[in-house]
Image 1 (cartoon, rainbow, N blue to C red):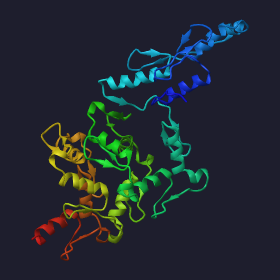
Image 2 (image 1 turned 180 degrees about the vertical axis):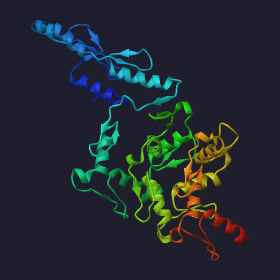
Image 3 (image 1 turned 45 degrees about the vertical axis):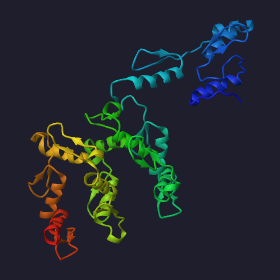
Image 4 (image 1 turned 60 degrees about the vertical axis):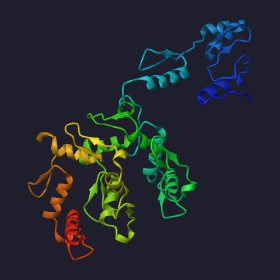
Length: 399
């Protein structure tokens, strides 16, 4: 055992190799890059390949072999400046320092990347481990003709991925005093998952220039998260025949995203007694899905000082929710030619917002038996739209 310590696994392997080579003269007290010394003379070098080449010179019987040997030395160059070195460790240290000191925003593209492609679908990734995970989750029935399910021993939850089961147990079954909480250093936010803390910091506390933006290959769109970029590509750049549609088994609804289908099933087809309601502690509001509930909390109950405002660049409008800002820009500031219109398939009606088109279809084109009615709890009144029911309750039944 020696007192040498370092946070870098590469440096530790580098140091242990010296003990195995029985090198006498080297320092175990610090974590600097150590030199290799010749036992027979005062020669020293930072590259083991140079030491081996030098040692061969001391032996006459290897002189002829030395002339025929070729030694290849790699050169590592920084993409941001003119720095060049033969040491991978020094290069990595320089790259880390260079990126920290740069004033330009970090924007990455997906060009010139080595991709790992799935043999069974169009999925691709930069990481071999991600490809393996994808195949286990999506194609194990094709590869081994069987699904391996990981079942929760405390509820009916099951998953194809072991990490998802572990995540489920942390979120659903561990008590607060049994959980390792990840606390934000800049606000009271805390979470049970480390990845959620990273997402929170990226969304709430990083400035524009510190964010590593991921850029779309087809347009000027850029995103903070890879999943956001993926959703953008699916919704904006893929044709309908290239999309894997998630279809509802109870009605004609279909979506490009599985999460949207889940929300649809909960809001449209689950019985009241089977729904897990998210109830607000500050008012009587309740929601069927967590994202809608979180949006209510943010827009209705957060203090003005704790709200992250989204400001319009063309007027004084500001919003607590980014979707509201996008809706404002689409309806107020886009030219007619730049607006994405949502057109009705049964009449000439068109709208700037999809919710308006849905309301139109419900009101004008759906049969009575296909309509989901919103019923008043205090009288026999029913409405086709939730906002109409709310207006009725306020005007008829408020004290």
